[in-house]
Amino acid sequence: MAGISTASSSVVTAQPELSIHDGTVTTTSIQVAQFFGKRHDNVLRAIRVLIREMASDDRLLNFEETCVETKIDGATNTQGATRKDPAYRMDREGFMLLAMGFTGKEALRWKLAFIAAFNRMEAEMQKPAYDPARIQLAHSLAAQAAAQVTQTVFEAIASGRNSDWRRARYLLGFAYDNSGQPSLPHVQTLADGQMVASMTELTQHIINHDVAPSDAQLAALATACTQQLTHRAQFRERKALAASAPATPAASVAPPATTRAVAAPVPPHIGSDGKPLPPGTFRAVFV
Image (tube, rainbow, N blue to C red; front, side, top):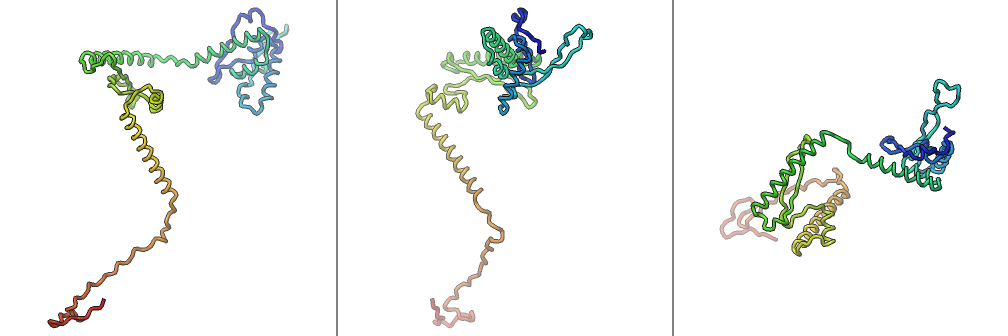
């Protein structure tokens, strides 16, 4: 492996062939040595210097040590014997760190070729995997949606329900049941003043004057937001007070007060024995 020499004319016309390893596009120190016309042992030395300099850096993950099988040169090797030589696998950032030290017009050319190869491979990885069942479902839903749109638009224009039908807007939606099966697409006409936007988008539209609500609409929106903020603040305050209130020990709870019966006042014409006094006679009552 240490005998890799400068690139030949056949290598010059070649293109880097990268591979996907554990979901990441990678190249190897072998390819770097071949395309940049360097000895592989020198490339290994440069990588190890980088690894030592980045001993405490997360970029150590950009290089992974591996090994390759190399045919042993020599007239006595009639059996095609091989040996395992050390090598490194690296991702895009690892390659950029390594190739940063390569200078010259030819080195620049190969840097650009490797970057283009990384871009192509990463773009391919972003493409969704081909799934015949999903493709068939997509065609079916598209056809159903087209039919729904056609019917809804035809009815809206033909019935004259919308006086300004040339500016009518339509909302197309898809739904799925609990088992993941799609239902028929749903299409509805958006009335004047209706909009479909997230809360963040709505706020930005109002700030940028993309929508023109009336003063009453803005005031109603502001009032609703203020009321909601007030309710949330009150709820959080009650929750905080409940959490901070000390628990009352069961032993310190005061027993309920004993109810004492109060005797009704005795009328003055009733004696101490409870019998009526003679007519014209009254018992003295002091207050």
